[in-house]
Length: 318
Ligand code: CUA
Image (tube, rainbow, N blue to C red; front, side):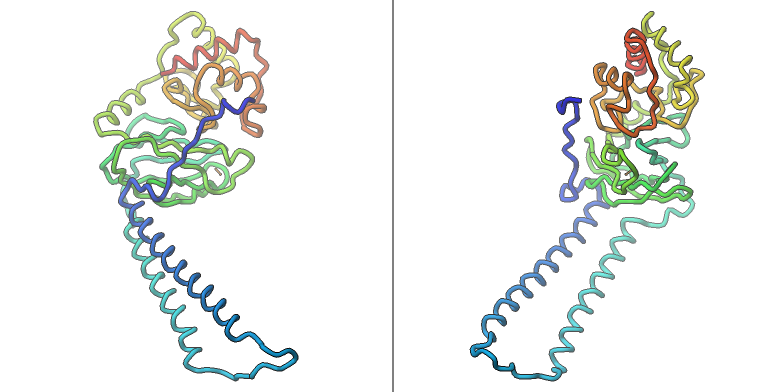
């Protein structure tokens, strides 16, 4: 596959914090960097100075033997102990500020890591989507994070902390997004062959835009608009695509793969790997294993025309 098909992923940086949680973490990070740099410089300068100043001037002579130095030893234990204690409490304070106990609160979004996509369910609505996770700005949101198969790890650097997603366990993360935009992240725990192509896109929107998006997503899938798409829809239902994928409003109700109800409205496909367009969709349906080796999408042998009808159907699922 030619390189230009891959999306140019810019990523986001912890230094470009876009939430109060990320600001706290960045602050702690800067304090650590300052302390570590000061220690590095002190040790480097002292080591150089001492090794030059006290180097042996005559060969074959035993250096002067010193046994113990109480004052120096107290300093050498005391300073690291004080620093470790200081940073222990700084880290605790940051964790308490960033990760308050979600006790009894309902999550705003439930995100589940799968090999290799992110499923997002919005409790209290019928919305279920994948990979492009829309969130409103200015509201303190509770994300519930879990995993369907192996351990994954959620991390959108500009929005704050990293959180493991562990099968059979719910973890939580708070996030208050300051400004609209697309924030990129990636799975940060090796989870198999396509771990590197498990990208995250958080689409942060102003509340009215978000409400509008949620409304549209809650609707059942659009009916196919023309004969080609109709034959694609029929093929989709016949070819057991629906055992793994859900298209709300049709008989396709699978949950093993990404929900495709509004697939056509997503900018990217394959968890941020490719732009969502007909050429890429065509490649993917022709030979999934060539596009994304190891992906749990089997290769169906479709005729060329059938792929065109499937592509047309999927693109109309706006
Ligand atoms: Cu999911 Cu790495």
